[in-house]
Length: 131
View 1 (cartoon, rainbow, N blue to C red):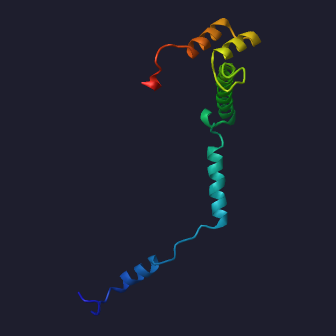
View 2: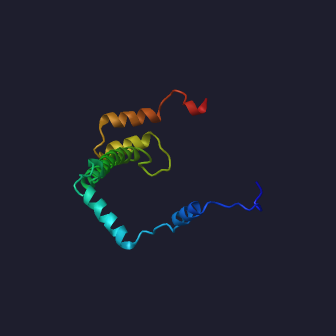
């Protein structure tokens, strides 16, 4: 069949095709508001899941913050005790004199910590770096 061929259709079919060839109806603002109101009414009675509630998120965030602060404070306390075990006498070198100066100051460092510091300084074994 060629497009230039004259095709005649029955008039009833032409009328039916013209009747169905209308513009698509457009949603009006009133229809949109009505649908929105119906949807809000439908879902208004439902409870939000626990994971969506703000107090649950606030509690979880507070727990993480407290855990972080506890861990951070433990590392900070440990670091300050270790930092006190270095160049105590201000000579620019860390040696046994620093251990003696630290023991004389008595900054609440235990005898075990002083022994460990002294042992690390005067260790006779070859360090792993030097091999």
